[in-house]
Amino acid sequence: MNRRAFCSAWLGLAAPEGEITIVLFLSTICPVSNAYTDRIQALMSRYAGKPVRFLLLNPNANESEEECRAYSRDVEFPTPLRKDVDNRMADRYNARMTPEAVLLDPAGAVRYQGAIDDARNPARVRVEGLRQAVEALLAGQPVPVDRLRAFGCSIKRGRIV
Image (cartoon, rainbow, N blue to C red):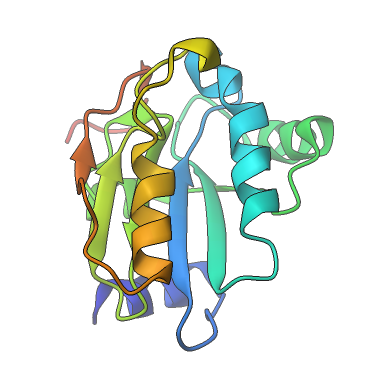
């Protein structure tokens, strides 16, 4: 099963043909992940109406489904934050941090993975790795940088990986 099919089957969500998918691994309690709320909302607004789908996943064993629902309501994401049960998606993409982004092209191939950008403080951002990769894919261009080291809080798995 390819990654796109796995993702769609596991979440019960099928992306329309031709869409790119941004998978964001987030935490309800990590201060670094929470510092990105406004930037994530801005990305979601920027790509509303474009062939871009967002999947927001919480892979942390120490955060409950109820915490994820409450967090989604509090931060008003247009897409719910879902639990990554048993770290299936985090393991699939070898995600280690929150926040961490994985960008999939329409065929389900990973085209970018890592940090949303290069600075916790928005005033210090120099490289917007995720946005640049999305823009390149939408324009049919090569992704300029396919990896930017993720930073934040480690994913709290329920088992050793």
